[in-house]
Image 1 (cartoon, one colour):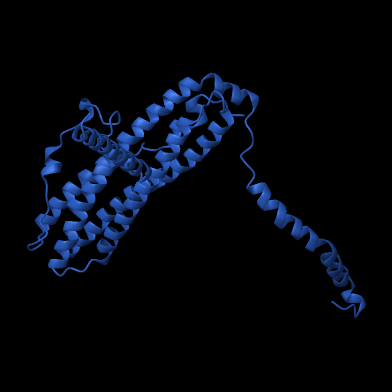
Image 2 (cartoon, helix red, strand yellow; image 1 turned 30 degrees about the vertical axis):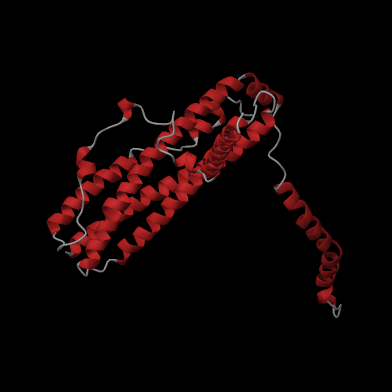
Length: 110
Length: 185
């Protein structure tokens, strides 16, 4: 093997090792920082297609930060805001104690 | 306490008794109570240990389903929090300031909502890490360690739940403040 070919091989190995170490460090930070749990694109944890609702009126609504504030503007704002609050209230079951209880997991209570 | 008259005799006796026994009793309590409080949760019964070991696979399967549901709920609720904050609370407060309308409750709500939201994210991360640790325990071989972690995870879940309730209450309170602004206009 010529010197050039050997150097090229060493360079290739070093580059692969460098990429590997960087990936390991990045994934460790990603996991330890807790970002993995907030990642919306985490495979296996995304909502099914049927569960995704397209609420165009809510997503398209925007309230201007400038201009005179009129009663009509505020009424419109309150109406849209109320819809968001109701949406939030529909998740009142989220993180309830029941799913992790002994009964739910089938562990007998003594 | 000096024994000066016959009427002070009962107090003298009490003083004597207090000095002799109560100090020792207090010292014992001071040592024993923290030890008892910090003692681990009572051990599982053989029946409970047996059930956990026997149904380990099913329990883990149920836990994975709960973990998935939690993640979905976090995404959905988190998106609503983001919308409420960035599309409603912040723009309205900016508009009120530009219109020279003073509503300190609304400004305070913005700060409070943002900080509770951050708290919710941190609590969810801690809870998820505990959940992951729970799933990594072999419940068939270590039912006690598994149950101990389960109890810890439950407590963290309750904290997350409390913050979800808190944010829901804050968003409802904000709505009440909006009605005040409407009346003021």
